[in-house]
Length: 99
Image 1 (spheres, rainbow, N blue to C red):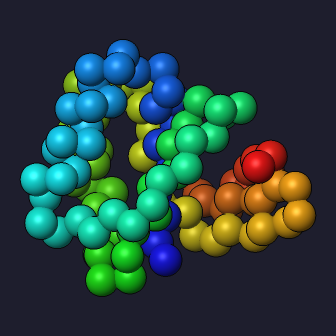
Image 2 (image 1 turned 90 degrees about the vertical axis):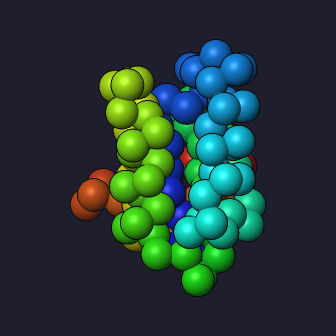
């Protein structure tokens, strides 16, 4: 699986969140398999199928959010799962998230 982390996603108005998922549904190049809301970080973790080019997905998503500077888009390099949390690694940073 390939993951993209959207920082501050939960800060968006409901209508903008709906527009984002409509946008994802119209894009043939992205094959989304799952999503997780990370409440403590106001973030969304998108899980893409292996046939998705994750760097291209990141750029497509960044274009959607180009007018909303508070949204940051990161490719997750690794996820380490623990019994009550998981660690996301991206941009040489680690973020521990409780499940």
